[in-house]
Length: 351
Ligand SMILES: Cc1cc2nc3c(=O)[nH]c(=O)nc-3n(C[C@H](O)[C@H](O)[C@H](O)COP(=O)(O)OP(=O)(O)OC[C@H]3O[C@@H](n4cnc5c(N)ncnc54)[C@H](O)[C@@H]3O)c2cc1C
Image 1 (cartoon, protein in one colour):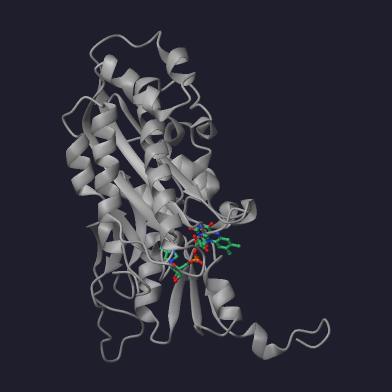
Image 2: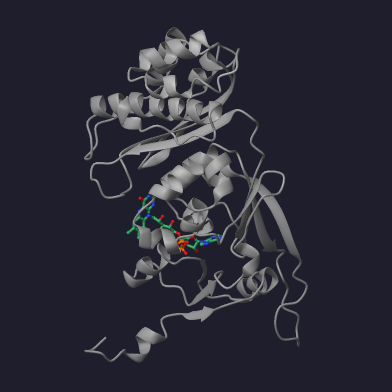
């Protein structure tokens, strides 16, 4: 660019296509032989193009496709890949039943980014957005992918012939990639995420710690989804629970109330590595009344499984201490939400 004049070769860097539906999009991608990318919010891809790190000749925008935008309550939750992080964070159903997803999307990056970045784009970044992936993993969704069988170019005919549009489901864990390309064929794209229904008395939470107050990528984050049962009616016990400051008091109360862990999933999100799941710690909680001893054993197991290393952002001992705090907070928040879903979760700063 010279002054305010845009040079012609800048304008013609890539051709932007705006298909209106899934069929048009995959047909278009199948017919292009030069380098081409799908683009959703563009918050990751456009800066890469501007920095000349990738040089596509074509961009196929998925933004104008209403099929990809919805957030639907159908036997659980169906999240269109084109839903923005802002839309997810402001959906009441997500907030009530898939609360860890609300926590993560509400905290991810600056507000301007949350308004454009989409679920699909976040999962398909070569280094997938840590918070979003981690919080989605808690709910074990299926990822619906749209694609097309290899088309053929027949002699004497223009365009693509014989391509067959298909949809397939993949487990979200396939997207736990580390600096590699997402597990999709060239013409495939993510259509939606299908999250199973959440059982009664299930709560979830996602908490993170950052070096700066700004909502950056974070040092570490923990996510938990827990289903509990209680030995007595606890509807009047919320105030007592919310007033407890020491974690030991919290777990003694849960033991007295015979609050049992029926099902649990615990994850740790790390900025430059795939999320880590603590199956041994989960086994310690599962099927047991949550007592100070059970909780201590569970945390001991988490710490034994973590092998933190000193990096440029934090030393190993610090990461270990932070991991203990984050896992405890995520679990207590999850238990709070499971037992009293209509109450606002109490400030985590109290413990
Ligand atoms: C200032 C800033 C702050 C940020 N802070 C955070 C943070 O705190 N935490 C965090 O985790 N992340 C953070 N991010 C990363 C951000 O989350 C990603 O930029 C964003 O999630 C990408 O989404 P998008 O829709 O814009 O993707 P796009 O840029 O549109 O696409 C990204 C990649 O995914 C592919 N793609 C897009 N949609 C699909 C689809 N439906 N199917 C298949 N492939 C697809 C594209 O081809 C491209 O390769 C930040 C980014 C910025 C710019």
